[in-house]
Each structure stands twice: as structure tokens, then as C-alpha cells.
Image 1 (cartoon, one colour):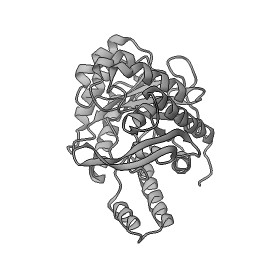
Image 2 (cartoon, helix red, strand yellow; image 1 turned 180 degrees about the vertical axis):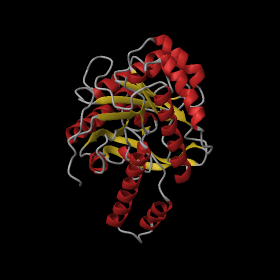
Image 3 (cartoon, one colour; image 1 turned 60 degrees about the vertical axis):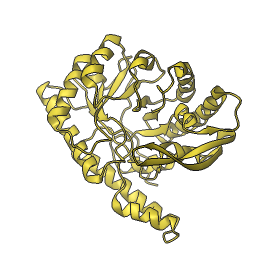
Image 4 (cartoon, helix red, strand yellow; image 1 turned 30 degrees about the vertical axis):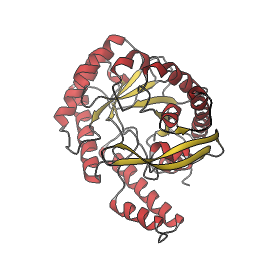
Length: 346
């Protein structure tokens, strides 16, 4: 029996030396090239860390992304970047402003993904920010309707997804933390995702980590992606039985590490969460991950949380005699992404 992949969500914290380098770069004391080399070193460190502890599906850590929305918006035409807006606690982002027709004029995350994948023989997820979230977290000073705005962004992200697949990505994650913010907009979320995932020959994942998604649970499982990745660190016992009742064939990533808390979960706590997950879905439908990106944690906290998660997965595999090898087909019978022809290091 195959199943239970250990994975990350996307972001890991920047190490202190990179934070200092960012300040030096902003002050003109560090060149673009010098900063880029330090970012690549941090990416390499996170890739090797994940390999060393036994993560199955890796992420690049997103150390070059200041914010998931602004990172994409500032590289799309039609946007200007405004002032700081508070997300939560003491975390802010620079709010994009749509001042013209939004379009993609060049690849955005492709080079970074290719570099990360060149460092490992394990698959690395390509992660893009979803169109609904980009539009929702931006000001619109151009479009007549919200739908026009969202769908233009969707076409831009679709072009990025196609280029990522062409570069070799076999897993494409779409981050949509705002997906359930307005339940009346779920048809628009679905329409935008149909554009993003059209002809994308990869395993597609929708990551949702903000707000109360319980009222939209049924609609989420109808969205046009192969897998949902949901924040369940504080609600696994309550939500997984409801997911079981949906009888969906969709794969599920269960977010069991609290990305917004500094306390490190014990392997026993994560094993308990996986018990609820395995009661709801078969092992070959399950991924386990943090409930959101870990960039707001310290490096030590993020590493400890990931180690506890991987240890928990190993314990459950052993106790239930679940093979650690990767499955060969998804529930619909489509072959899983096979061995990757690794790109040259860039």
C-alpha cells in the first residue's frame, strides 16, 4: 500500500544573514547579484534540509518572495505597488493597485523553481498565487467589474503555470487564501481556476489557509483541481469527519502544523491528526503539511516543526504498514508524475 506524502506548503523563514542582506540591499550596500547569491544559498539550505529529514515532496522555501501577492503583482503589467497594509499581527504587505489591463509579459517563478529542482532528485512543487487572492488583496482602479479583474489575472497565472510545466514541474500548487472570503464568489473562484488549470499537464493543488472554509467545504471539493490542501491544525477532529461524508475522490493535504504559533507540535499530536485523516480518506489520498507557509516562524521553530511532522508520518506508516514509496496513479486512474528529467542547474 502506498501513501501519506510529507510535504511543505511553500515558504520557510529567511535566515538571519539573508534578512541582514535584504536591509543592506535596500540601503544600497549590496548589489542585486550579491543578494541573489545569498537567496540561492538559502534555497539550497532549505532543499537539503528537507531531503535530510525525509520530506517526500519538497518546496523551494520562497526566500526571494517578500509577499505572495506582491511578488506576482509587481511582475505583471497593469499593476502599481502601493503602501503597506496589515495582514495579521505585525505582518504587512505592499498592496498592489490595478491601473491598467493585467497581463503577464515574462516568466515570474520559473527560474527560481528550475534552480530548486536542479538541487534534488525529489520532486519540488511549483507554487503560484491564485488569481482570486491577487485580485482580492489589490485595489482595482481600472476594471468595470470584479469578474473582469479576476479573470485577467487568471489568464496571467495560467501562462505562468504552463511555463512551469514546460520547464519540468509535475506538481503545481495554487495558493488561494482568500478563496472562501465571500461565499457568493465561489462560482467566480471556480471559473478562474478553470482558466488557470486548463491544459496544465501536472498534478494541481489548491491551498486554502485563511478564514472559515467550513460553509464552503462542499464547493471547495468541486473545484477543478486534483487536490485540496486545507488548514486543519486546529480543526482536524471536527472537519475530517465532514470531509469523509463528502465521499470525494479528490486528494487531500492536511495542514497539521500551526504556522502562526511558535509552539512545536509533538509527533504524538500529529499522529493523532493523521488518525482522523486516515479515518476519512485512504492513505494514498493523503499529504501532510504545515497549515500555511512557515515564513513567520524562526528557522529553529520551522525546522523543529518539520522534523516532528516527518517523524509522525514515519510512525504512522510503520504502525499501519503503509509503504513510504510514492503512488503510481491518482484515484481517477491517471498516472502520477513519474521520475523527473532534472533540468540543468541554472
